[in-house]
Length: 141
Picture 1 (cartoon, helix red, strand yellow):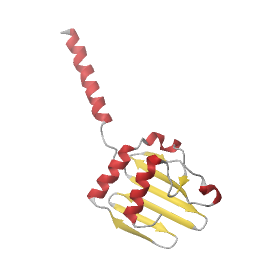
Picture 2 (cartoon, rainbow, N blue to C red):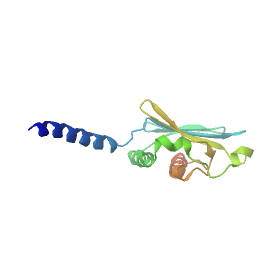
Picture 3 (cartoon, helix red, strand yellow):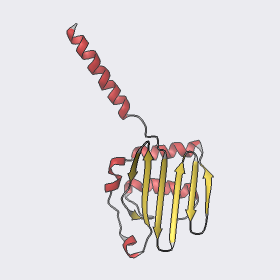
Picture 4 (cartoon, rainbow, N blue to C red):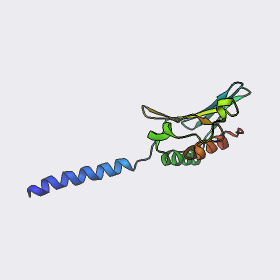
């Protein structure tokens, strides 16, 4: 009986820990910014709205439930704690050959910022997310 009093709470805690690890990350806001001298692309998804801004135009679009679910899936595939350390595959932005791009993902009170990369050539872990943002906005890379 003594062992049962010890084993039951331990098993319960282990089960709760496993459930907590499998929860999906519900983001509050995702911002993609790409800029260099003379060029700007800013895409923000917050709630069910996509806001976009360039030097030429700005506006907003509604994001469907299906698109939001796909975005959540993409975000959940990322290891958010490590996106700041991802290595950019190219360095064209250093000589203004490409826009400097960065993602900022806000979940609850925590912000995750990616490493800076060339727009159109992100680290492979962020490729899907960047492509999704450009497809969603209708802007060209």
